[in-house]
Amino acid sequence: MKPTLVHKLCCPFDKQDLQLTIIKQDAHQNIIEGLLTCESCRRYYPIVYGIPIMNPDEYREKQLEEPILQRWSKQLGAGFKEKLLK
Ligand SMILES: [Zn+2]
Image 1: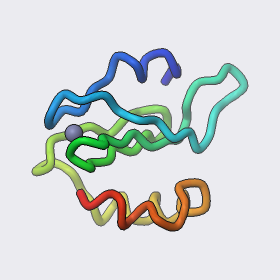
Image 2: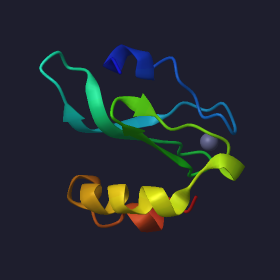
Image 3: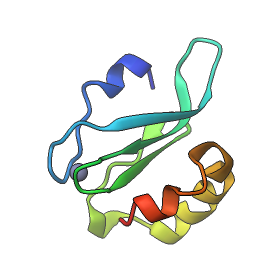
């Protein structure tokens, strides 16, 4: 996804602005992997293969996302898990 698109996205739960952490970009600055976080409700939405995963809670597969977050843990920082609970 293009970085400019991020500014048009908001949290599907409470419609607040999202913060972006870029993990991986291609040569055209498109975001291949990244993490969108909502500071208001502390939800997180991973970007995988350029697609933001923004399904409602009941359609999320948190156990499938776990290995991705593990792989990104270096970029996200040690305190990531404690800061985001959902
Ligand atoms: Zn939110």
